Image (cartoon, rainbow, N blue to C red; front, top):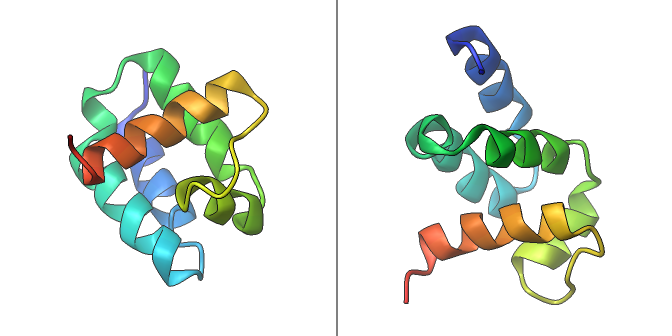
Amino acid sequence: MYSEEDIRRLLWQSRRGMLELDLLFEPFVKEAFRDLPEDDQDRFVNLLACEDQDIFLWVMEREIPQDPDLHKIVRIILDRVQPS
C-alpha cells in the first residue's frame, strides 16, 4: 500500500522534463493512481524507473515494451486518456 507521502514522491518523479510525459503522468498520479490495484501501482513505479526516450516511444505507440508488466501499465495510462 502506498502512503500519501509515497504518492507525493511519485508525483515529483512524474515530472520528467518532457512535456508529453508530464501531461500524462502528473494527472495520472493525481487522479487515477490511488484507485489502481496494488500490482498496477507497482507497475507504474517500475515504469517511472525507465528511460524517458523509451517511455516516450511506448506512449506514442511507436514501440511496445518487451516487459509485459510495462506494456500493461502503458495501456492503462493510454486507455485513460484515449477511451474507446
